Length: 173
Image 1 (tube, rainbow, N blue to C red):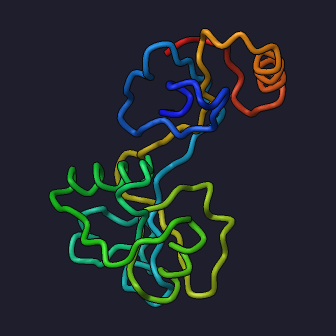
Image 2: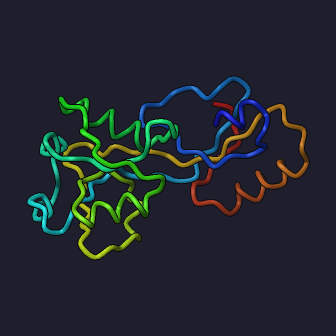
């Protein structure tokens, strides 16, 4: 989002924060989907037998997640959800991408909160469980500067309107 706002990127695929916030001035977004925050645990973990996992049940667990300096909306949502449940997650291992995070969880390093769109990542020793309580949703979106005169950008936005899963109109946030 920052690169779009500063003008060094014409179009960005972004994930809007779990807590709605205004886009930077002059930046428009179009939501193209919705993802739910879910829990991933090793298959031999005590919580793997649960149908739904209360976030509070993760309070004493070691976490695997993204580094703090990546600007990850998933990391931000994890912190937000855990703090709402009364604890700060104790991160024992960081990794740069979901595949690696989930491989570390499958290896028994810790647990993680991830996105429902990651369920396709199937690792031996890994179980996904929905969180108990109201769902926490993050929204992938396109982001662009409203003052960008690029004809190519306008063409991509028209194609995106037709091709991407969430219909909507181009509107500034």
